[in-house]
Structures are given as structure tokens and as C-alpha cells.
Image (tube, rainbow over all chains, first blue to last red):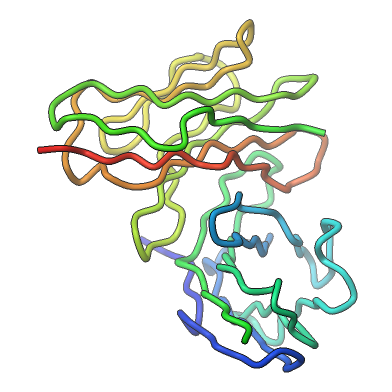
Length: 114
Length: 114
């Protein structure tokens, strides 16, 4: 069964450093997403991406965040200058083009900012 | 904006007992509703979803959920719980306006006693 994969599983970084989280969505999906879950809190939507551009973003997704599909398989989330409060589990998801299509989630990357 | 409430943070049941996890949503129109499960170290796995039609939906692993518009609820049920069902369960809502962001509840952690 196709699945979303994410690397690394755990990333530790110093405050102020840039990090890139990587995802390989399901191959025939066209919508890609990032969510995050701060420890003990809800899963929160960050951004959706379609046709090489952001289709929707939340208030959390400010100028320090960016997303990119650098090639035909990867989807990345970049955090330019990490803050302590960026420590969270980051989930990538993908779906087909229908509005109601199921979003399939990856296993997550745990980001720890020291 | 839509919201999701899962009133029970933590539930403990005995193996073989029945289970019901509560989910209430707030949204002005008919939402799309999902239940996801997260086992330790794993991503979010879709259990079932409701888009339209029959209000009782069947999912994987013997789970079912019933959409009750009058109560704005989408409770998850299983007639006989197995030890492997111990995990965190998330209810999520999507909307039909073209926005794709899912809104998640805070989750219910299920513990299964032998």
C-alpha cells in the first residue's frame, strides 16, 4: 500500500538555525500538506500546496516558513530561523484532487529546538 | 470557523469491552468528518470518514462511527476492544467550501486493560 514517508524522524537543532524537513508524498497525489503538533496540543494545519504553489496557509505559517517541491517526488518544509516554540512533531500529508479526498499522513518528524 | 471537541482526554477500558469515543463539531453546514488513530511512534492512520449518505460508517479494524446532525456529533464505536487498540484517537473535520485544512480535536488516549 502506498504511503507518505518523512525524513528525518528526529531533528535536533540550535535556535536560529535553518532546518529542512522532507517528505515523499504518495506518487499519484497532487495536494500536499504540512501540519504540526506541539507536545500535548492539537494537530494544527500549516499549509497546503498544489500545482507548485501554496493554495492555503494558516496564521502559523509566517515568513519564516516556506515549502517547495524541488523535484517530482519530494516536498519540503523549511524553517529559516528556528525558535524554541517551533519544537513540535511535523506531519506531512497528501491527497488526491477532490475537495473531500482523504489526506494520508506520514509518520512525522520530531523537531527539537535547543 | 469550524471546531472539534473531544471531551474525553483519557479513557481506560478492559479488553473485550465496548468502546465509544465522543466527538462534537461546530460548523454551519454539513462537514466532512474523519477519525484518525495514532499509535506511539506512528503517523496518523485513517480509521473512517463521513462525507455524505449513510450516517453510519464502517471503518478499518472493526470501528464504526455515526454522524448525528441534530447533536453535531460523530462518535466512534467498537463492540469489543483489543489490546492493540491502545492508541490516541483524533476526530477531524473538513469543510465543503474548497478549503482543505483539516481541523483536529485534541485527541483521546485509549488505554486497554487486560
